[in-house]
Image 1 (tube, rainbow, N blue to C red):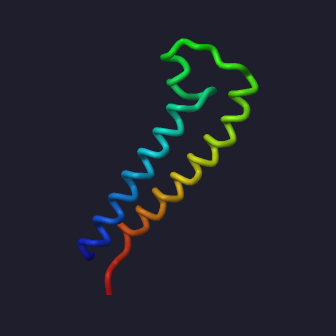
Image 2: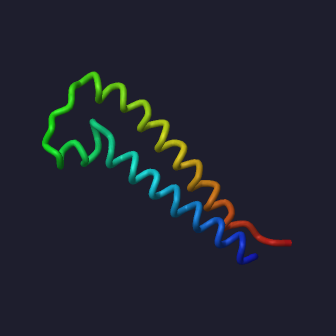
Image 3: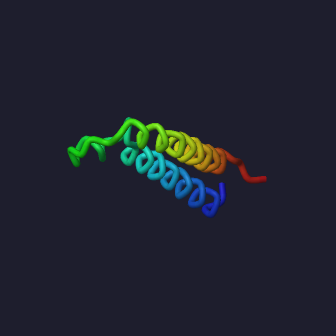
Length: 76
């Protein structure tokens, strides 16, 4: 395996995991940010932000998948 494939794959996996963590922490409904600040958010805000959270998490999962694919590739 080339070092560049391994480096690229591991950096994509790390970036994807950081993205998942970011979108989970900043969500109004599921995240820890709203619980730690103590400010209650309205139901409408939580519902509107949830779609962006799901899109962000799915996008981050795609980045993790590409990184894992690069890590498992064999060179010719």
